[in-house]
Image (spheres, rainbow, N blue to C red):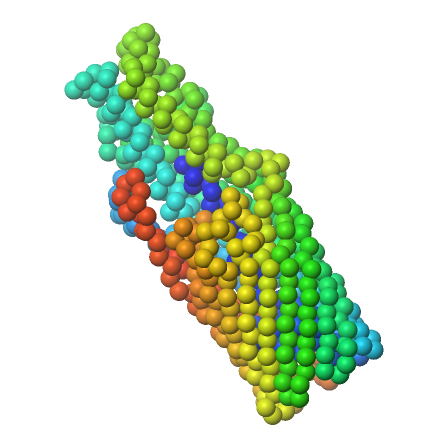
Length: 502
């Protein structure tokens, strides 16, 4: 039950899911690392110095629709009173109706002064209406352990008879039921300021900094747990029907800064560019109102149950004091308290936890074989293993994320430019890193769109892209046998943007 709540932290993430889609020009052609345009304020800031003199602004609106699907299989799921199948499918839905961004540049002589506002990480909320597989896995194991304790007590108290392990109480099979829910919301707002300088007609450089404000909320619960035919709260505190519930309600906020360097070099019809973003160190401060159960009152409640059944207080106390029963209860309490601390200790009120954004290197090459045609390729590398996460989870990765992309853009007429792009994202995942609390899957993204030249100084970008994720499968040996998981996702993004030159 306790470990179930660890699902809160990374429903969205700023590390492995850094948002690079900060302009609609990217959505219709992913390879923008060496492109010259106002969207370069994010993707190629040094290249913006080659735009015309004066002010340039880009206003962008995106709508993002995502799903996260996890298929689990575990033998103990057969003990669920409401669903005896050993297989489960958990689907999370994420929707960001408004994902805005603004890029601005003012070019004066050889200088380009630039600013960018965007949601650089996260960007919405994800809801799992039925919780997660890890929720049910822990509940099923807790039910099995509780029925085992019941049988141990009965064997000492009344050999050959049943009380706590009877169907009226906890039973002997580990049958259970419960309700759960999980919702995460995360936004990493970024505002960057910087300047590029055109050293000569072929070479420009850039330096800037981005301020990041992280704002998150996580809410979830595991409630109404029943083992056998007995509500679990009756074993912990019969006077409170929520005494066995776990509830998490945690707000987090933090600030970080990202130094950025860039260079762009033009050679005839070729253009070469690179950008490096340093690691963003962020410490998220918790403001929480959480509820966690305690099993410290379990012995007293068991004595009360014995007395209610006609057993004297002295006899009940003696039964629970035997080495077999006392040792079983102590082991259960120690394990429960340890797992509870590991699970929700991260969300203690006032605590600070790491949530770094990794350093990023982008390299791009653009080629203009004929005037209306532009071809681009790019490479990204994220230093994910150096971006600290809670309990150094980043150390479980094999390497950082690698991305390669390619795109083409063609001026079909004076009024319309068409484009398309592709990007492959390969994460350095391991089975130890993967879990339903925070997962990704390597993918291919494809996008296409148009740029409508409304006037000589105003362009309208329209685009759509989707991400085709693979499946990441894991298997582990658990208390009830082999626990299997199959992870995948979907992603659809629609966008419109208006570029204006002044």
